[in-house]
Image 1 (cartoon, helix red, strand yellow):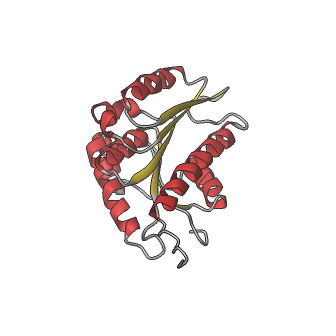
Image 2 (image 1 turned 180 degrees about the vertical axis):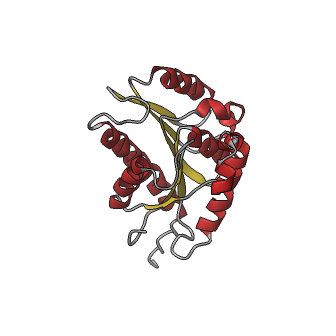
Image 3 (image 1 turned 60 degrees about the vertical axis):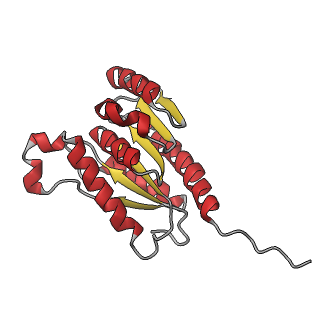
Length: 204
């Protein structure tokens, strides 16, 4: 939680990952440097994770995300701050579904995401959405192209050259983090400005 945070970004990890994901923690660090608070959490309990069906239950995961979002908005220091979602892999679908149900979500960024798993809800997403995909992640890139066509909100597909699904190649995760940072700073900052009280006008 940086001092004078301009917004909060909630991370939604993918299957086989957790709040300890080194890639998401790296991105979170970059967002914190830009004045954004971040929250990484586990969507499932250890017992629930053993059932692979839960890992791909997008309704369950998006419901958990919605509950966590309500908790964040009620935390001291976070009240009134715009909230954004950063979703990776299957977490991208959960983030988009939760955003479709919550018009107050200010922005969504996905990395190597599976937005196709949220296909029935894509048209209801209002938050500006950035889809970040590796240039060498051919199958997921095509899925993201198709998903973007189903979005009715402001959206952008950003392709990181040379990156595969996990962005393990040198410099590729840094590029993804920079794209996410710029998107959140722009759109969460805009929502903050919209909510700011008007400056009092001087008496004539």
